[in-house]
Image (cartoon, helix red, strand yellow):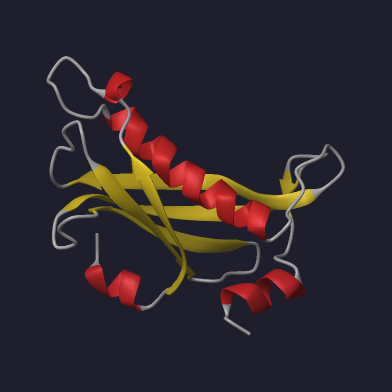
Length: 141
């Protein structure tokens, strides 16, 4: 991932989470799927904070793409910060960047992910322009 990407985005959330025993795989470290779940948990918590409602007749952000760079295995027990940044605003999309960082040593980064989210009409499953109120949120206004 491009470090300058994070620098061009705005931090919107930091969550403290602990790895669960059952997330270890046969190699005795956290399974790759668990990382994605932690990134998702942080994104959804931020959306909930913004009161984005995902009922059948609403609009909201959905995940378009995500890529993850696994930098160091997380081994149980570990507590980490999940940081979430936003930026890269387009007509109907925006970017997010996440990191999973050791709480006890913030120089120890387990993984980082880059995502593109698309503002969508949930009913018809099609993209929509990002609404003005959400643009303001992303731009920190």
